[in-house]
Length: 557
Ligand SMILES: O=C(O)[C@@H](CO)OP(=O)(O)O
Ligand SMILES: [Mn+2]
Ligand SMILES: [Mn+2]
Image (cartoon, rainbow, N blue to C red):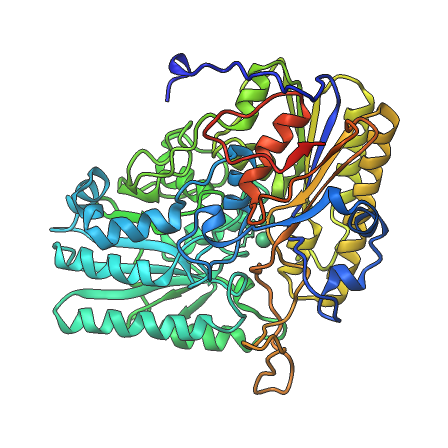
């Protein structure tokens, strides 16, 4: 929507003043769950978050952060950063990528739209390549969608298909890549039975191959490029299931970090490099970990690594990953059109905003927060600061990450008096939680809590207000549970460690010396979710949210 038709002026809140500094803290992967030894937040020393929970009962509550509350297809879908920050920033619930792709596949509309027609041009004489995360986690992609697309494309003329798989183990249990590859192989062999030359061509673990984000480490994308496009990798196999099983045997190997491999024919030649004339679809619907590859596939001018060859292909994303950059140009399904976000409203109403995180979460409080939009709305009123993340390590090695640096940057921004809103994402609970290392996650949670304290102390000094929340659960439950909630013990006699996000609700806490007396959480929004936070923050800045926003969580008694 062009800004011309939008009236950006927000109404004044009848009771709440303007001019108070509001600190917005998003703890990544910080849900609420019952105490226990796999609840790293509970086990860790977290005096700051504990005191928010325990000392002001009408200023602390839980909100929903998964399923339909954040625009996902079902209540079995765990939350994630994209949908969580979209909801927090946009104040409304949008049908998200997972759901939009489901609908487009179910109705068949995906095959009638521009993107599919564009890639279809290659089907008669060239190969269709599908690249993406092989998982049923529903965070970045879903295997059933890939299966449907394979079927749909083959019924519509694709004669030669190559799938480039990325193994997960982050949104699903480690080791499930084997079953997923078997499922995919079965489908591909059925296609071969119908005369279609279809096979897996390459693979690798998502965190080591291809799926980096926010330009933390281009080498990750290069490893994928070499295997997918050039057909070169340190490991060569005849078959993907065998490849995954074999590579998993190495000490400390796991799905997330499997090295790259290519599938070769009897003569040792890679079966699926990408060449001129081919069609390529990146099948992930989620943007952050696909935009780097999308740039490599699409941009004529590119200097992030040596591509060696830049094939002239027809490339489409499952979705368009960046609407502002129009990246990629062609896509199979239109992304949710998230407009009139709270960030844009507030800036247009004079709110000077500072946003900060470290690289691996930087886009969360900027790009996702602003409805999948790169850059600021108004560079005179906004400052976005990225603290470089460590790269080339798994975060259990340095579980404190950059939490203190983020806390200090936020503190300085608050004390500077230059900003009305200071917004951060503190990554530890999530990034370390994903490693499945319980001890490291406990250290991570403590560090995150200390960073919150640094920020709240600064809020105290300037007479400001804080809103502390999270985008979804992760560190509060590190074990896979059965229906009764008991930890599941695997064949090896060990509990199954949960590296993924959870379905748990997340806290929202408000307070600070600037919070007008009588402000408390309403009792009549019992099912409140992350999308209710935007209107709440607008109120704390002294404004009433637009009518179509999800309702505020607060009232003034
Ligand atoms: O790391 C990621 O890509 C996801 C999990 O797949 O986590 P988050 O949604 O917290 O960014
Ligand atoms: Mn997250
Ligand atoms: Mn995560």
